[in-house]
Length: 165
Image (tube, rainbow, N blue to C red; front, side, top):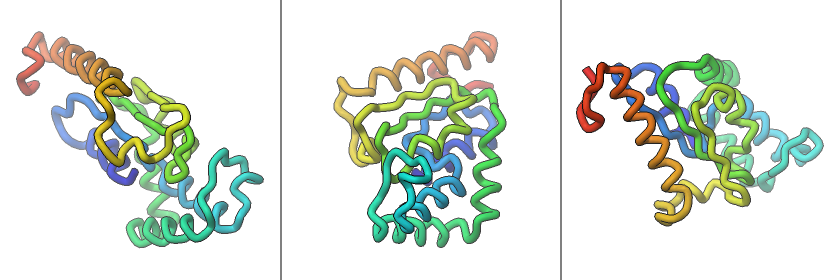
């Protein structure tokens, strides 16, 4: 959720970052706030959202989000910060029916992410506990291995298990 936003943001600022895997990231905090407001008002379905929280749940989530970001302008700036593509290999793992972070909230990042894995029928629970080894773990492992090989190649053949210079 919010940690996913921070992972995406840090992948832009930490020198030598080799990959980023973000689970259910609130990639556009303002769009998520708008979604939560629609849920509170009972108009999320009319507004085109495929999922919806109960108004009381959405209200609590919105209050926490506003407590962190402060206002709509800060949320807008945070989302816009993640829109330009960048070179760090990035994978998104999203729940297809996530009521906390609907798919639309990550669309801007999906446009440039190197890999997006949408788990059909799954919600925000995908980040509640470690996944079963035979679930989506092989997809993430393959992405990370590919990213590390690509990073090694980009750093003149440095072994994958060493930090890039």
